[in-house]
Length: 273
Image (cartoon, rainbow, N blue to C red; front, side, top):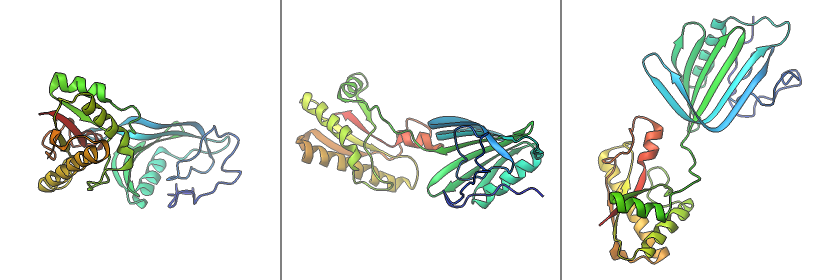
């Protein structure tokens, strides 16, 4: 009887010997959640730190953005490939053993599941065709924003629309204390206000819809107040020019049905007074 695909419970717990990392492997490695099928090697390996993949479920599509993996496994010479159904059932079992959920299975050749593990939401699509095993995995996460808007672009937004969205002010979940990595965005906000001394603004906190509305109203107000306090204490902006407000999830810029939409909705805005 063939060995089942086993879930690797702890990252790094499975060490492959020389036979498992045969010379046929392309440059790459097994994903830490799943071991490979015995007698197979990695014939294609692709990895991107941030990419999107659309998982086709029975009655809807789910586009997941995050760390992205694609592995194609091929049988070594002389190895009899398993049936597609055997591959699918093994991955279904492995997903369930990880505490995940099998979301959809198409015939006897493809299955899709989701695993929430150590704070990560991991989507898996496993399929089999012509003896090859295909594994697509996306670890959902918001993109790390490396290019931030600045004082010039915010002033343009305020001039044309009366408000500007500020991303780059970071808080821990359900907290109002500003994290140190928010410093560049705060400095740009201060630059905008110092370069435009006649500009007075509401500092408006926005949340997604996770949790109760009443709780999020207080949280968004507390976060806006933290931003005002930082601009006054660290950058010398006159308190009279700033007024904190919180609107919770009342003004979304994207649907709150997805994690990506929620990330866009969690923001601070500058609104001209």
